[in-house]
Length: 525
Image (cartoon, rainbow, N blue to C red; front, side, top):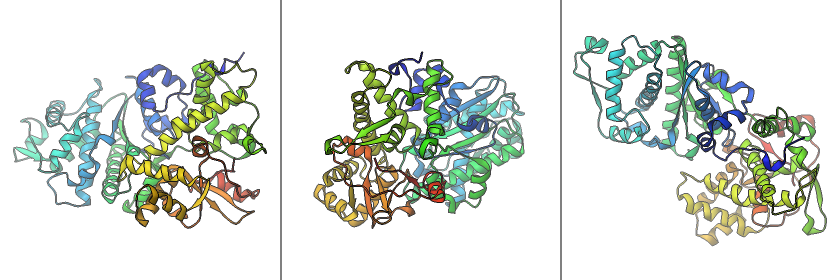
């Protein structure tokens, strides 16, 4: 007998909270897409790419939670606590410029990687006393550990020098009593590359999704971070070292900074892993990786090898009853149309339905969950989760929470699902006077966040096109915008007449649902 739906497990919104609360349950229910963890631990990949909500952080915390002394050591560092915009100003002992920024990031990465190696009691260095003396000094200066951000801020105003210990190769080779960051880095590089250990070591840099990187200062800093990690990993691979340095990065951001990276295509082709949960249209969707994730996560938590979550729901969901002309939509399509096709969104909507079923507010469901339970769960998801998730996309944007509230209020005040740029600008002006440039910025941000999409094509041949943090050059500001279904649901708005969606040719269907270029399209609910 299958377990009650109320007993299923869909995880928490933040994988870090989930891992901290119950590491064993988190590891047990984690779904490893295409054996991503093996490729990361082995050093085959150093970039983990994917839109926000696709599980980059979950992968990092899974590796840290599942590490063992016999296999590998993992350390996750949250870059959101680092002053990214200040890194180019770090006084390394070189003239200002891109090269200095790369060196600054190398220093930050090497300090953290060295800390990881030193946490392994079986890791051996050729000059152990020298390494430990320098590491002690770096800790005292604050460059190793979670509080390194404050030390970096101090180092952005004055050149930091490290006293040379009176032992080892540095003492023999250098005539100065102390070294600046630039002169010290080659020694640390050699130490970490020549370290000997049985276990692997993986340093992962997370938190880059927590900052809206649409600023030239951030782009300069981030491109230098990627270049620094690439060069360090190249040396570690050449020396057959014990580990690697991994960056967790949005794919749209990597595409934007690619022009500043001479080897960006090589990085993407050879050394990156793309967390791709694409859902195919039609019946194939129930076997797509995204639904496999939901089924496996829910099943493992109740010790079942196989579980079909959709079997708890009726085959179709009726919508539009208020208009008197209800429409029956296949259940998976209905749920997907309420999400941005990411693991986080889909897991949250199933979890909110589970909470409603577990509350006992409605009569016990039979073979399928009742319409009341499903509708209330979707409403809770839309109001409590989705609106907040869109607001979070404005983190780091000038104006922050205030401008986010104004943008969402303007969308709400328009009062309909289909609108154009001028209507949004007028609604925004009623909330607070805005410039034309601000209107376009906010529309782009809402577009990348998945709050709105474009209507593409003429009436009778049109389709809806939604993006999830993709290439901003694709947005069509002069066209018609469509409000996401979850926001329509959250705000109790009526859906306006949708354009007829033609049956695409196989080529069109592949482009709409499968392409890696970033296009995300959804049939209307």
